Image (tube, rainbow, N blue to C red; front, side, top):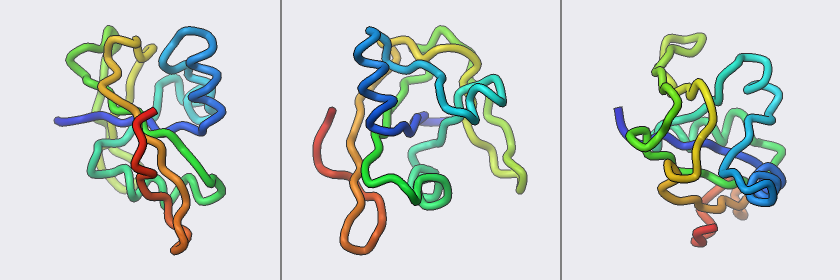
Length: 116
């Protein structure tokens, strides 16, 4: 169904790199629900607006589902919109890129123009 994106804080990204992994499921929602919450590339803006209002900077990790060793399921949220959920780790080989998003003067998270 297209590109899958994992949004994470700068701190989560730095921790993941420090331990030699691209992503470690450490968010409360991921741990609670038993899968890694993701968004399609078309859903990123809405997800940022809804769940990341308190962040000044986040990292959007682009994941190639064909390179994952974990299963991806597109499951409906509370209002029936399908979102990608990854049931297992995101291996480094599946990362297609990562982009920093920073809060702009309109108080919205926008691409900072840098690959991380």
